[in-house]
Length: 297
Ligand SMILES: NC(=O)c1ccc[n+]([C@@H]2O[C@H](COP(=O)([O-])OP(=O)(O)OC[C@H]3O[C@@H](n4cnc5c(N)ncnc54)[C@H](O)[C@@H]3O)[C@@H](O)[C@H]2O)c1
Image (cartoon, rainbow, N blue to C red; front, side):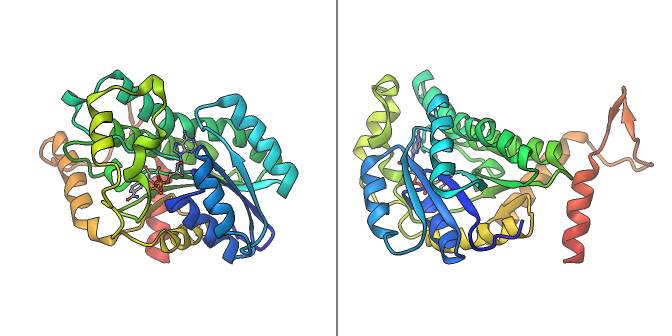
């Protein structure tokens, strides 16, 4: 989708880190931006930072609140106009191994990272379909395709966000609505201060205690500048790109993981590819099209 001046983006978790970086990149282009975030102090800081940057509207929204999401969508469209680009970006990063995580860690992380993205899709997709145009950007993580130890709930939630993006891309193919999944690498943000957002219902866990202890450690401050990542997102939306990797450094690792998955088939015995198996198609032409288009570009 061409992101011409005047188009409107709605960004969850838009008041900090990557969300704020995407807001800046869209505003540089002359677009209007609805910045939705659960943290009032983040919203206030973003309001001052973006004061002269262009048309912005700031909304307090917890992405797990479905009715609140619908109200926020109405408010944004009333203030700025129809939303063309939805960025499901809000995320929390409770990190810990499966054996150290309890239901409260899983429920919090899945409800914000995956549930929030799903709520965004459910809220905005009907509006986009009615207009026959739009683009949905979902912030996953490089960890969605290159998982490692110690990120059980977080990496699972991001793999789910990638799955949602891919199925959505297939379902909307050819209908004028694009989808981009951001496989984000290390980016300077406030995600290490995550304990501030943990609602009481999900508190009191061993991981939560660890988050409080490491609360202000500037773990990711040496990462990519959020606005640089935001400009990459803008380019990916314009190129109608399904997968956006922000950090090339992970290329080899991702390739190795894909190769590792293929070992599950056993040795390649050759022969022509079948086209159905028990009535199911054995390939999806959408992926062939993506590969073909990237060879031509
Ligand atoms: N920073 C990184 O290195 C990195 C890497 C991979 C993926 N990510 C993902 O990028 C996205 C943005 O994170 P960031 O690193 O910029 O962190 P950040 O903490 O700086 O920004 C996230 C924003 O989301 C908001 N938020 C949290 N819970 C919310 C909720 N329930 N409803 C609405 N807003 C909520 C926070 O208030 C915050 O302003 C997240 O999805 C994160 O998982 C970040």
